[in-house]
Image (tube, rainbow, N blue to C red):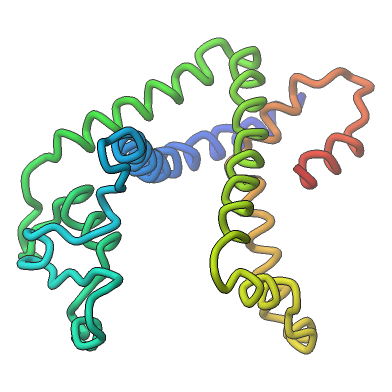
Length: 219
C-alpha cells in the first residue's frame, strides 16, 4: 500500500460519481423499455408499443409508420415510430426549448429501481460485486445470441453479414481508426473509473495477474 497514492483512489471515486449518475439514466430507459416489451409480448395482439405510430405522435412529431408512403418520410421533420415512442412516451419532451417540463413519474420510478439494483450489487462489498459481475458478464452473451439468431433470420441478413465480416482493409492504415479503437477499449474496461483496480485489490498475493488481465479483456 502506498499512502502517497491514496489521492488516486479518491480521484477515481469522485470520477465515478457523475459517470454513475449519467449511466443510471440510460439504465432507467432500458428498464422502461423492458417493462413495455413484456407488456407488448403478453398483450392480446403481441404488438410492441413502438412498432406503430399513435395518433398523438402523428400530430406532435409527424410520425411515419414503416408502411407509410415515401412522401411522409420525405419531410425532413418526420420521425419513425420508435423515435416518437422515445421522445413522446419515454421522455415526454416539451416542444419549447426554454421549458424543462414536469417531473416524469414513470422515469423517476425506473431511476429509483436502477439505483436499488446498484445498491444490491455493492452493499455487501466484494461478495455482492462478484455475484453481480457473474450476471452482468454472462447475460449480455445470451442476449447477443438471441439477437444474432433473430437477425440472421431476417430478409437481407446476408448483405449485413457481408458488410460486417468484409471490412475495408485499407482503412487499417488509418491512424484515426486505431485511435478510436484504443479509446473504446479504455472506455469499455472502465480503467479511468477504477473498478478493475478496486476488485483486483481483493486478489491473493500470488495471484496470476497476467491470466486475469487476459480473461477480463477477452470477456
